Length: 335
Image 1 (cartoon, rainbow, N blue to C red):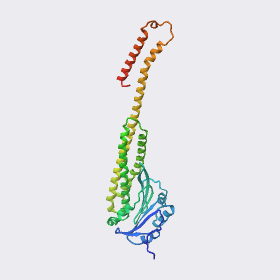
Image 2: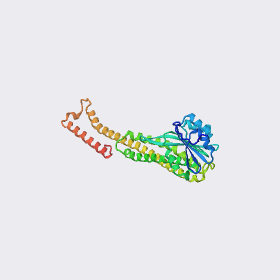
Image 3: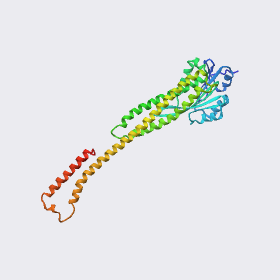
Image 4: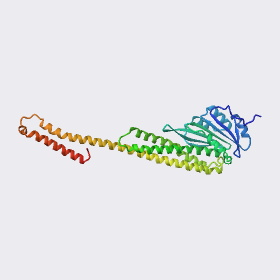
């Protein structure tokens, strides 16, 4: 019979890796999909399969090999799922959102995970880092990998949550930089636009992170037939990390909302100051306008027109009234 542990050199591109392990956590080697049945027939082994945006045909092959549920396979193929955990017989189907910073913003991806008693399958869609480093880390600690597929699942979830941290830190730094623009003397349109974009991205991040609390909480407390008892402490640690990321995200959303309100208030105050100055100058110019329009009327009998001092007196009166209005407006800080 052919050796089931042949190297999978000619596997299709979406199949990133397919590796078999012994129950003591040691690596048997890469295998091809058609040999999974032979490996699973051996006692005390399990398989870890990694996929990246697989087509329907590849998922159907995996479904036949592991007996995956139709609904879970359909979700894994279509992507665009919410973060969740579902139980299908003796297997779990988990969807988590992944986040990657790209050109000053963030983009989201998904990882769909099938966990069975003797298999772990990850399906990546969109923006997501490779889990090769996670696999290498697990293989360097066979005593932990001996806990079975549930330890591999913990390592992947921990890796995903750890990748939330730099995104949150980047948001915090951007917010601190934008605070200076918020209180700048001149209005900057790009400031309010960036604040709004950040608030929208943080809302999307919260929708990705918040349900992870329920997922990790379930894994830390339930599913005794799939989650090794010794791995539950690790899931509690992931839950704690998710909780802190969620709390930080909520705090920053509130700070962003306050920054947007402060920015709009400062813009409104600035506009009010401009309007006050315009109204003050209009009142100042109204004084000579009133007097000149009065004396500009074409009446024959106006006694002051006969007096030689009338014109200088009118100029003096106009200047005096304008000076009084200017002083009053200056005192009221309208000018």
